[in-house]
Amino acid sequence: MNNLELQKTANEVRKGIIIGTHAAGAGHPGGSLSAADIFTYLYFEEMNIDPQNPKDPDRDRFVLSKGHTAPGLYSAMANRGYFPVEELETLRKVGSRLQGHPSMQYLPGLDMSSGSLGQGISAACGMALGGKLDNKDFRVYTLLGDGEIEEGQVWEAAMFAAAKKLDNLVVIVDNNNLQIDGTIEEVNSPYPIDKKFEAFNFHVININGNDFDDLRKAFAEAKATKGVPTAIIAKTVKGKGVSFMENQVGWHGKAPNDEQFAIAMEDLAKIDKALEAQA
Image (cartoon, rainbow, N blue to C red):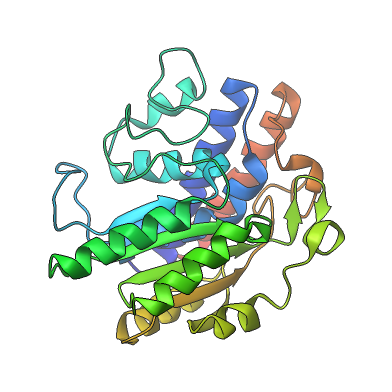
């Protein structure tokens, strides 16, 4: 897909995030929106996956370590064809396959149940090591929050990944600078994030995580990097695409009401029109 097609797809992913959280009356739109471009690039461009064969042993794996941003992952998966887009309206409903955090028990295409922060990267390391031991060529991608990397288990996993030379592992940090209680500096600053991963013997790439040129170059560089794991530090805007949510910590874990839903969908419709004008 070219960048314009990816931008249009990412906007559809953002609509799904708003639709799902509004229908649920709960969820985490802010961090889902900041990562929407990352989800889109992974699922529509980067990963070797087949929605019709979600258990293909040779598929690339994805672990959403920051599991609370499941609305973003679900929207990307729905738009990619894993399940009907209409099902996004069942988010967090009793009996729905779309639980508040990803559950591989219910939804085909999920490689890991996640949500306990800090644990997803460890599971991803295990998958990457398993691939090495089985002489498989699949790659493993995991998305972490910048608040999540305050968890000690993240750094145990990072040490392990480098020690085992897991060059089939790509760790992506969604650096939107906001977590549930405020800015990450105010809560427990992990900065400088890039230097920390470098100290753990990662190849580190700093990018604008809302820019598809940057994403394309970073994932190509990660694929070309041998002998060490890669960490992509993706600077993003929390709530990206929705005017009243952008850079507002209050939208970390709160659903839009009916009036806010209408404004958000209008914002995203304006983005659609702007993108159409570029076509």
